[in-house]
Image (cartoon, rainbow, N blue to C red; front, side):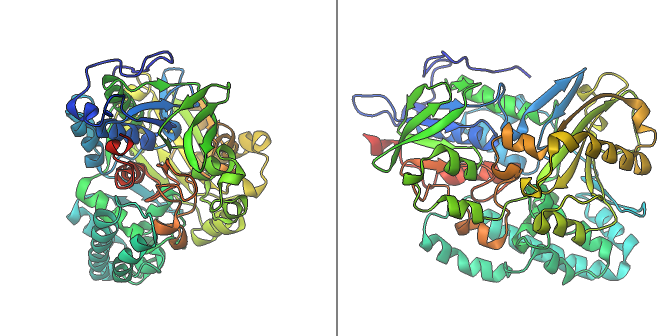
Length: 524
């Protein structure tokens, strides 16, 4: 994959000649309106593609030294680790961006379907292989509890309804006003969205382990299965219909592909360019100020940064009647993550690409993380072995891993700089006892990310990894809007706004943006 980085001094409009869609909105007697995008995560890159195709002149400003945001890539000692997202679902959402640019994603990206999607290993050593094969899934359900097969079928039917109503019909539509909320109420009623996904699953399945298997998905987007709306059962249908994939070269290859599309469209990407303030005049965003003092004007500003951080730290309080400090502080935020990236000189062939290594507690552990903000001694882990599918992620004969532990955000009061190594050692011991025997003797590369890194490096409020927790009253209309409630000409994409976290969610937030962004002709 080629590496595309537009240098800081690159002029607007450079690169390959613009497609007709790029020039359609040029103002009479002047240039097209300017859009600044803050952040180059999946949401920001997708928004930049869509804005460019709508006719805006676009420029992206990124705090880090490489694009990707939470999808940053670490390289060390011959190993490649995706820092954040590793699960690619809804590939059509990505393909659509290439199509908008007159390209085929398959020319740049090699997606490989995974089977199984995940292995869920329970504390007693039993496991469930979760896949897109309907018969294999029924066999797995029957292996645990044959009496639950009819309930499993009913669960699939209800999840499909949530997918149709929650994803297909409502996902890409911004909730901009009370009318949008009222229009969505009938669908919410049909889905009985006031139930948690765990409660919904319990209505169909009796086996405790199967209840875990069918309810864990919200954890992938920062939600507690005992609190988030059952609408998120749509993830089950999304995966069954479109599969779970791996992008060869890692998730970072998708980031590079999108950056390449933007470079071809002449969209500059400024790296090492932290935004210190969004400038506001007469209630309207007029541009940004960088940490080095540079000023950049724009007709609209789109933030792909953490939404709470954007409002709290980039917009002065007098411009925030809705998103006051008090409202921001009172919101409930997702858990954070402790991530250990490591490489081994031995290959562990028995470990699949994606694996959940569950601890002895489920509900109690989640209550500690989400409600009590208490860092417990036990944990459940997500173990990722990309070299199972993609040997190029590690040196020959080696394995690349990352293991992720959901942990409370910074309200736990944990001194992560002091405690990180102790916690890493506890995780290593757990892996040695369960699925990676002899691990300690095989490690040849290692690094960690803590909740403090989410706060300090990724500028996430409270170090929360996924923004506001996706409970019912912080979803859809009740989530921070794609069009700012406080500042005209300011828009939001990414995990913290509608529809929420996860790669499909942040890509859809950029699509929802199209329903509220001004047409370029309105600036004429």
